[in-house]
Length: 434
Image 1 (cartoon, rainbow, N blue to C red):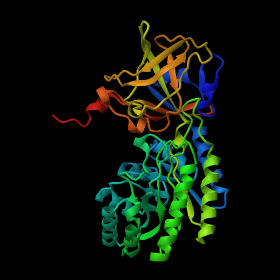
Image 2: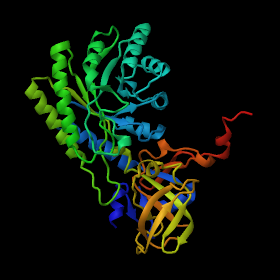
Image 3: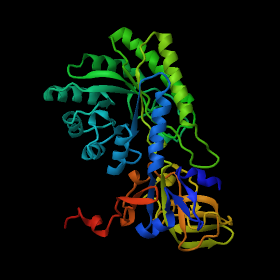
Image 4: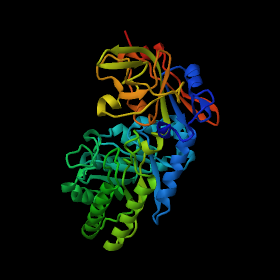
């Protein structure tokens, strides 16, 4: 069953032919908690955290692994990240608030964002986050002024846009020349000079983020080479010491059988070797390396379970399998054309029979989860399991058509724990006023 390799590391076929995740029967989970249901495997989450620490940490560089909360965050996941010794990359006051609510060590928090509000920056200063990643001149000036008012001297990184094509979807390519993120190369020297001369800021390094779903390591090598050369120039001109180099995230996972992703070790080897070699050539001290995986930690750990309703046959054209979720809980296929695989959770090993299109329940023709996938004969009541749904599904979700956001469970060694309850109709109108 090749598709099973895309599911969490603990996935297997149970005695009844059901998909089992973390020792829990997925069909029973759907019955107990309802559908749509998002299932996270704790073992996979923790193993991915450990693998990033191991692979990047054994190549001659002092390394910090920072989980990108934007992929998916709630209290339970924040606690797992905390326990595994990772830091947390947040991009909003809300994500920072979740970290604070569970006692996450705020000195391990990196605060990102291309348009941070004054309120968010003040919160970051009040709570003494570990790093503020400064994205533009407006923020640089505002942060220096605020820090002076509060008697603080925050450590900052300057985010630059290195102008390198990561060969991914244009919506998730963030390090190209035409990007809303970061200082352009043409103005990074000006930014470094201003940061070094700021009265209340401590610039400790540089940051770049090439994009997301990067299936090759070469763009990282190119970006590191460019940034190290830039750092050397800034040291000579402005006395800027590169204490930390943050290369962002973007590490890919395998969404389909025909698009394998590099191993974490492959990324780590290219990144570390280029930094070590480049620093030796330029006679720079080795900086601390920071990496920010999100999808590569949470993606494979999450599975979406849907219940089939209508099966619609258009003779000679297409067979639609309608499920009880769709673009409100996973917008990626509609937004990016993202592709997914699937299994019938209640008949994993049944012989594949039909080519079908799995469609959502929402009032958009573009609400298609999976187009043209071969599955066993599907009928109403079947449970469809979609792997690799642990990242950028729920965080980008909505209440479109006044739908209820799904529940989330965490499974481990045969036990399932509800870590986010399903919304209710009362939740939908809780904030309405008449």
